[in-house]
Length: 182
Image (cartoon, rainbow, N blue to C red; front, side, top):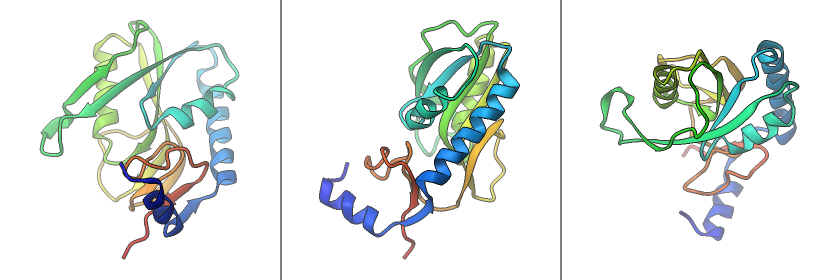
């Protein structure tokens, strides 16, 4: 966690990657794509805490079909853990068995966590599990999953804003920034 002054300094030195208008337009486009594809399934939409909150909140208001909503909270055990083992802090409280799911997250970086979430939900009996991310990081790595719905791509830099944090700060920004590379 950084103090307010440090957070302001970090933002002042950051590069704007996607403006608030660009982000809003991308969220609307993804909402239309999801509405077209999932309108008949009354899916259970699952927000991945904490980063997925702004994206899920904006997305939900633009989906044009009935749905159920819940959340989940997971964390990776550590950088040295192979295979994407997760610690589930909170599992969905609504039953997933037999349901079509839409998992909403902030960023697809390496993809290990989101792939493990999808696999676990399918093991729990979900009929189908779609994924939507605000940002897909163009890091050149092979990822264990490709998101079904992607609002924006971001460069292989440390990005923050619209759910993504920089040392605990700036999840609340309506735009996406990247820390300046020295």
